[in-house]
Length: 452
Ligand SMILES: *Cc1c(COP(=O)(O)O)cnc(C)c1O
Image 1 (spheres, rainbow, N blue to C red):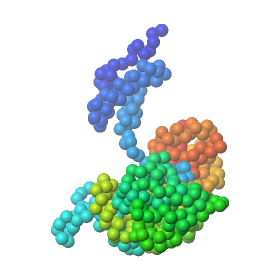
Image 2: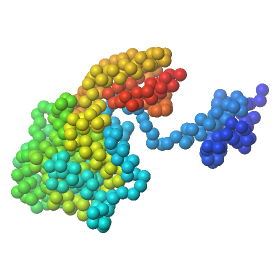
Image 3: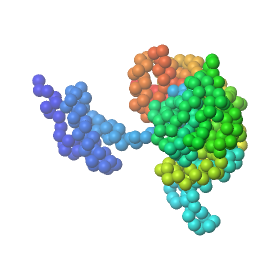
Image 4: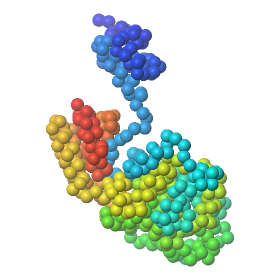
């Protein structure tokens, strides 16, 4: 018997077949040719991948075309149970932010144009007034992310000088973000004080001198310390900073604008609280608890913010119009805290009652069972994520899928929409804490397709 791989059709013959010719109407020729070549090569390497007839060849090529034409960045259903999942794009934007992006993105805008004066304006004016109103800050500036905000604050206050920081706050936020590395790049020299578990006001007063540029406080957003610990409050450092004319930079990280005690999340300071305590500069993320687009928000005294605006580094961290549009719309919701909790998806997901989460999971469960997918509902606990409220367990409900968990995980990741869950104790779990009504049908159809 001859090896079937010897008689594979040529790419040019495939391009002449009816099915492939039809593809050429809707797809650039180069894409179809490359797809046909890929399918032939795959068949050559693996005899079991050889299509049986002309129709199957065309279908294999069409599937390949669809695969390579899929956008690289695409929606994912977050069934991990981590609401602010950095790998999955952190905060889903509120509807008003999407409208705001659409309003300015397709045309021109007054991004850097003062319509009243008919002259060049500044992009930094757009969210500043709202941020001042919402936080009580004297001045505000928006850059690309909180890491950039911190570098800008340190470089503008402490280049070639010392920034004083407690050893207990020398933290790692995520893979590529360690405070001491960021600080080294900012030009500030790290002046460590205290011990890992304890720092005292006297440590700060001893360290501050002619070489000091700033005192830095970093919020322990993704871990906590317990036992023999002592943390120094910004309020207690403020007199030292004032005496030496030094700024206190407070890296808040998660960026809370309103207290979330009502939904059971307590203990994180809001931006207003941090400023009231005496921080001269507060930096925080736009896409963590604030629930807006990726951004670094800088709040504080005009004197320091002016220096940051004039720093050439600010140019390289400058924020895009899409971000400003989305951020302004998100911030506007905070004028009415109840509206913010309802309309900002991050806050709505965190604040959803267990019965709401359970109701969604039950709806999906019923649909899956009717489609013949063997699965059951289980109680779980979800996390806030995004380096916020690290110990907080949010009660949640998951669907546990019967069968090989790893096979499920990879099939679901390959689906459309892709679904990312978590594997726990050998089970594939789809946690519903971060699954909104809007993606429920997509999740169900993706699971059914992955089951087939
Ligand atoms: C998350 C975080 C950052 C980094 O924020 P990005 O917006 O991701 O750059 C910095 N500091 C703290 C304390 C954080 O929690």
